[in-house]
Length: 237
Image (cartoon, rainbow, N blue to C red; front, side, top):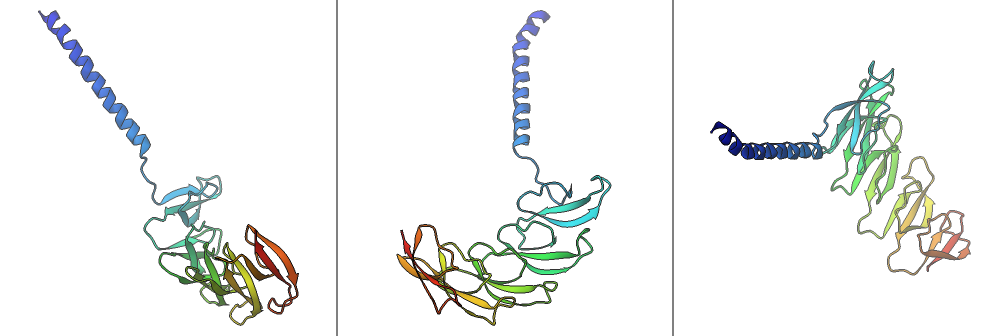
């Protein structure tokens, strides 16, 4: 009787074992698919830094073969952070201040970086990255940028014309139509008038203007508008 009862229980035991194994496999797969996020991670200075992370501290380390170790932090909901001057600056962030640092072994400075969200104008240090679609409209000396100039940058939204410093990035689809002496752009002598090409099929630009893809230079002539340079007539192909 006991033998018959055991035979009847074996199929149930096998089924239970298979169900348990399936649950273990499912749990393992979920754990592999969703690793725990890192926070305040310490890495060796020669390690790659993931996109969206910044270096907030650097110290000497016996764990990294004589190299420094970095503390890196992920930027998520923050709109401002203090980072070492050699830290990568994520896209959409700018440097708004520089100061001496005791937290960043190997360099003398740390930066305050700020995320551009709804702003259409900002003041940044001259060594800050300039995000795409923004231009430099003013440059002045600054005590906030450790001896470097500071820039006023402006986001081009609905404008079709703007006056910018001659070292400003020129966004795609914009051309330089005039150059003149400037008192607003410390470090250079000139400022440019830039114009957005919209429905035009022909335009007159300074010879040092970028030529957008799909446009051709069809004429060159002397110019009084381009500080001694020639002007080009460009035509959309």
